[in-house]
Image (cartoon, helix red, strand yellow):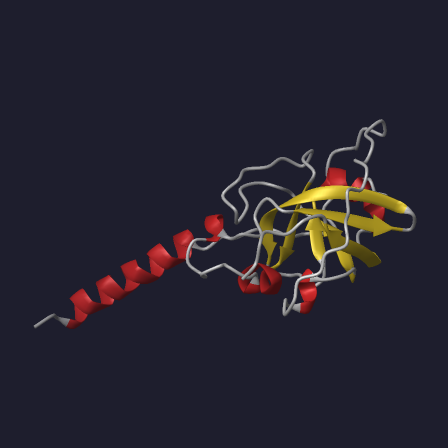
Length: 173
């Protein structure tokens, strides 16, 4: 029979292992990052109309949400990015509910690597999904400072009413 101390130690080790495998990402939208090179140009939108029968609403049509920015690093998709990359983090709800994701290894989520085109006040930028945003609601997206800077000055901090669409989706079903 196991002693109370042995059980307590095993329980603590299990919790520690779980904590180490869970991504912890800082999403301070007010943190100022390096000055952006104003010569950077947003990539041209490559959107196309997507119709997926029976798909969740977040997969079809144009979405409207908030845009924020964060300091990039190792993302939930297992890719290490920098603030200069054109990448984003989608909401934890969208990430976790994405069709085909088994909820086990976030690196294998089919949303990883998909491209999204975002628009705000007449400006557009295309980014790749490489991360999961725990502070975002379903249609809000967290961007690197470089991608955010293509839509607005970093001092804005939050883009209310930003729209976005998927450029392509994997075959679902």
